[in-house]
Amino acid sequence: MSYEYILYDVDDRLATITLNRPQRRNALSWPMLEEVSAALKKAETDTDVRVIIIKGAGPCFSAGHDLSPAMGKGRRQLDDRPWNEIMGGEGERASVWDARARVQDHLDFDLEIWNCWKPVIAQVHSYCLGGSIGMALSCDLLIASKDARMGYPPVRSMAPGEEISLFSWHVGLKRAKWLSLTGDSMTAKEMLDYGVANWIVPNNKLDAETRKIARRIANIDSELLNLSKTLVNRIFEQQGLPHSMKSSGEIVSFGPNLKSLRNFEKM
Image (cartoon, rainbow, N blue to C red; front, side, top):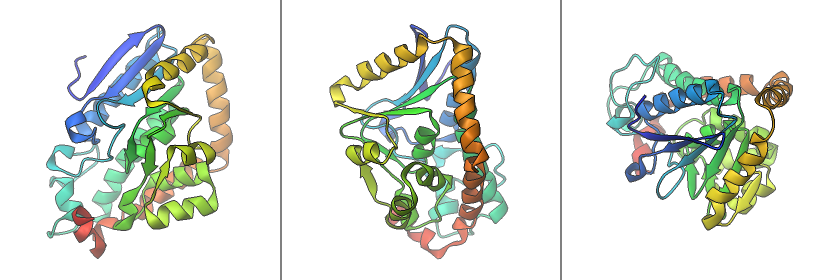
């Protein structure tokens, strides 16, 4: 399969998926997400792959969801208008049903990473904002550069998404409220201190250190890795993590009807 919006490479039992829209700060469009989904499935069933790495090309990991017409139409979306018109324009708001369909599409994608049979590592440099934090936090491990910043600025003018529930599980009650009430971003040190990142490394060593850690994991048999990942996932699932993500998605479905969204693009 050929890809237009990502790069896919397999080497030394590691599959690397690179978000490759650097001119758009790797903004997440549906065509890109579908390619990432296909690459995940390919790596998941490839017996030569034991660990998957997701990273961004160019200046940052990702600026979040693409709100331009390039965003495209999600799997369940009924409204054919570009998402920037639905979410930030002056026209008719999206129905709750259509907004919920779009949010559910994004939630399904994040859960594809969560449920992937193989360990997935997020390699984050510079900005990881908005919808892209769902992708990063759904990964099993997160390795970030010292210049990394992670946050969800859209809470300043729209309802919080399922990403905030993931934040809450990682950082705890008070910090989750800080992030969801202000839209502020965490520094790399805060990401490490709050349990969002596993390691912080110098910018120029991010690739090498990520692959070093990934190769260490890849020395373990794939079936054992799957058992370990599944066990830890089930512990958190029994505590309600997927349900909290779904609840957050249902809440954000009402967002397109908020008056504040008319100023979203001016934020």
